Image (cartoon, rainbow, N blue to C red; front, side, top):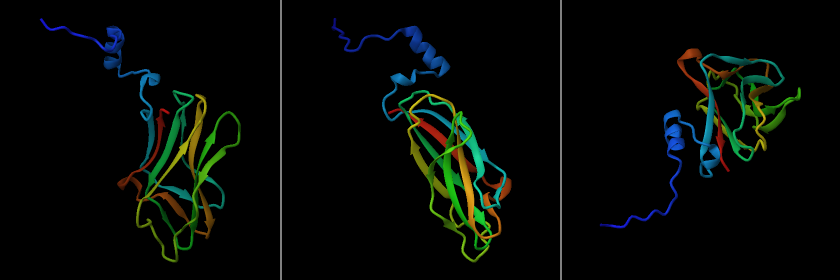
Length: 172
């Protein structure tokens, strides 16, 4: 008869079965670098930026599960503009105060002298942010028409393509 040695204590079997059945695991038990939660918004309709002020393109609330985690905000958008229109983009965070905090802003995106119903490539941009608490906050992806007098499309081609705004919580 062979001897069996256990090097790890048994976990409570009922807890483990519950985690498997309900797809819930305590985020504190996961290793660093694990994606704890993912939220995303899929845009299937055009959004127009036609004024020289910050304009909300997409937004949604996020409640971090851990106060020490990091958020990865990312967009993957089909963008377009009329001739000679330039655009800035930014991510903002709003909690219980009426004003938002700018997390990061891009440099100016130029459309040149040609009408570009869509830029030649899709725009993909990421930003890492430490919220430092578990308070629900509203995260926004915004655009600003820097120059020109025409229109900038923050999503183009209507329902024939999709654009995405994603926020992932990563355990630290």
